[in-house]
Image: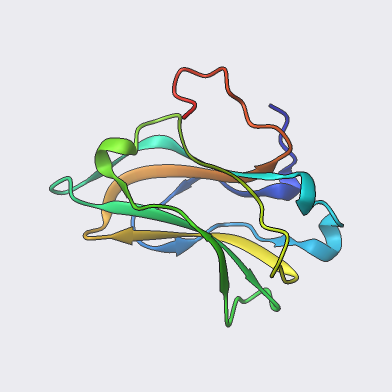
Length: 137
């Protein structure tokens, strides 16, 4: 799979508490590309929590300003449990919505129940989703 760094939100980003992705996508720089892209969110490094009850939800958010003063959720994943947050596991593979998109996009990771003690995540847009991996779900 070929990845464009300009379309990458998180690259092995350590997430222990709820946090926005390291990078945002400015659609004035990216151009009119959303129609042909898919959002992928992957668990890069196995996540752990103190007693194994933490969950992680990934949201694709949009806003008119890069500070995301009033973010709008375009997509919200299910809450993934610790048992699902294994290294090299695709958590989200979905088409990007074309309606309601504002200038800026980011992924927001919501950690629920309790903080993670370890875990790294990737999030990016790609035109094709890799399907030949053992853990490509």
